Image (cartoon, rainbow, N blue to C red; front, side, top):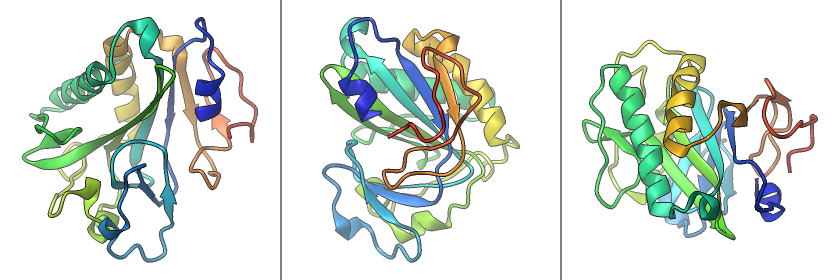
Amino acid sequence: MRALTDGRRSDTPDELWILQHSPVFTLGQAGRSEYVLSPGDIPVLNSDRGGQVTYHGPGQTVFYILHDLKRARIGVRRLVEHMEQAIIDLLSRAGLRAARLAGAPGVYVNGKKICALGLRVRNGCSYHGLALNVDLDLEPFSRIEPCGMRGLEVTSLQQLGVDWTVSDAERFLIPILAAQLGFSPDAILEFAGDFSAQGLPLNPIGQRGARRLEPGTIQ
């Protein structure tokens, strides 16, 4: 992500990368280790995104948003609003009433966090993105103070009675998020497989979009 962002030109297409991570805790740039309570056998990795600590694992869909904010003439606050609204609209489709929480980016249902956001902007372009809890095991969140918020509870679509698979959630979210961001549907890259020490996927699948990726090339 960073390499693509650093090498962007004014005509480089925007992209969405869609994937699931192997179990991992990630600490943002300002992340404080005191919010990692008892990680056990789950690795803790530093990340150059904003925010504090969160958990990623199977059953959670991650959308990385590589977006030229200068070209789109929006700031990071507007990007966050677009991301949150896409999730709110998606959850409305599932019959859930979701909301923002002032001062705590992300999306919440009944005060419980269901979608985390974390971004980095370099040279006017964003990377990293959002993580939506679909049907993952929520136990690892008890080993941290999610997003650095003591006592914050998390939830998932499955816990809320929505019988969607990760593939269902991704299929429904892609057009909603693409419309919010003004992306072409061809700007989608889907990934699966093993992950590098930086938490990036090594084996892309379902490739489509501006770039053709070969296994092992995402660094």
